[in-house]
Image (tube, rainbow, N blue to C red; front, side, top):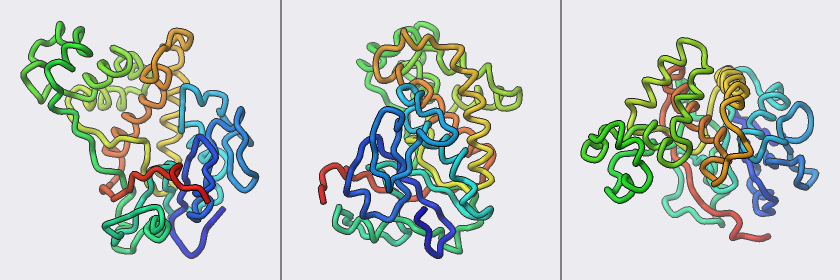
Amino acid sequence: MRKLKTNLINYCISHEYINFLDSLDLNIVGSGAFKKKYPKHWLNDACGKNISKKNKHYGTLTSIYWIWKNHLKKVKQNDYVAICHYRRFWLKKNYDKNINLKNLKKNILNNIPKDFIKYDCFVCKSQSLKGYKFSKLIKKGKRSILNNPSILFNKNKHTIKLHFDMFHIYNGLEKSIKFLNRDDRRDFLKYVNSETKFYPLSIFILKKKYFQKLCKSTFTWLSKCEKVFNKNNLKNYGEVRIFDFLAERYFSFWITKYCKFKTWPYKLIDTREKKI
């Protein structure tokens, strides 16, 4: 594990070997490693206690699970765990405005500044769900419109639930929420039916104890959610990766409910363009 004098352990999850990642001084985790080969100097989610075989439907969650079950003991109690992806990287507070592949390494976050350790969590900028085009609503949201025609004219009705119904599985959220404990079930249902934004991408920075709690809650819930969906009937990407998309919304809800959090800058940059 790459760790200097820092209060942050930064994990980067990748579904393929990208040699450029080796130069970034991150803890790289190969995702879905039960059927893929990664270099020995990489971590992989198929060793130790793992759910790597669920990668088709869980996506990066199999690597998050592996970190929780196998690597978290290496993190000090008051330190932070950062989750990023092969093309999304957390940045230092005073990062260069023009980031490219050549200067990416020096801009990657490697420590939480002292002034910010009062926060339990850091997330990326929220994604607004308001303002679908009329044609998109008609094409993707017919069943939702039949139940509530005001969706066509009221942007405040463009909620997390509507987004999930349109682009993933209709009523998939509601069916899954029933498997949560009573308090979170009520609050999460209210959250998805009222919020018109959420913190996406399943990337976050959490203090160790909150990372532990989030993982325990999420994976306990998802294991129960598997009873809801017939995996053989899942077709397109929005359906096949259903558990990944459920968790993405749950992460956002759980963090806003249980953590003192702040948004933090990150950079989207495709490292597959660079070979070294």
